[in-house]
Length: 209
Image 1 (cartoon, rainbow, N blue to C red):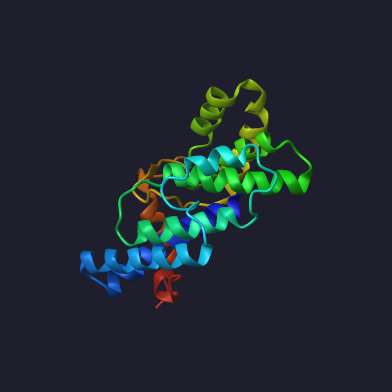
Image 2 (image 1 turned 90 degrees about the vertical axis):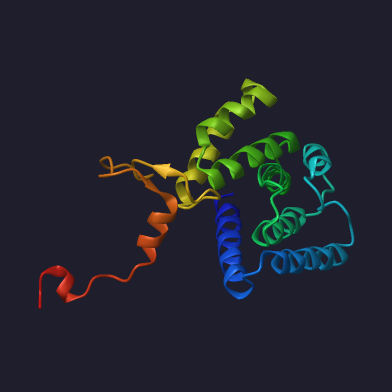
């Protein structure tokens, strides 16, 4: 789950940045994105990955024949759409991706489909949006208290494994994910990502010269 969340977040941000650099004019960028979605639709050979994907979410909870790559297809459609500048939201598509992934993992592990889909749906969004507590509560509201320990564990582990990245780069944090003291100031995720990419200081940065 954490790996898929990282792929989604990194692909979306990097593709968006690349398109903005190569195609500065938004209408052309959106036209290219729309054309790419049409190509993906033809390659997939189905309408299942267009739109929000609510029918796909419901199917993931009960269909043992759900195509294994369904989550990857929806991820590709969503990343291209958002990176091109369309504003349709990422919440429901992420639920689709998570539920479909959970369906596949449940079949591999011999778990109930509805449990796998529920945990996958909540945990993927929790990891991508850095909201494990909120998604654990949401899962209980939607599916009952029996799902709580499973969702809480998977969502928390996935949240920790994704590192300091997320679908909302303006999200602000006061403490690093893995503990430690409070930061000197509240920072946005994009600032942490910028610091992570910065080159290490040379000898002059350590007081030498």
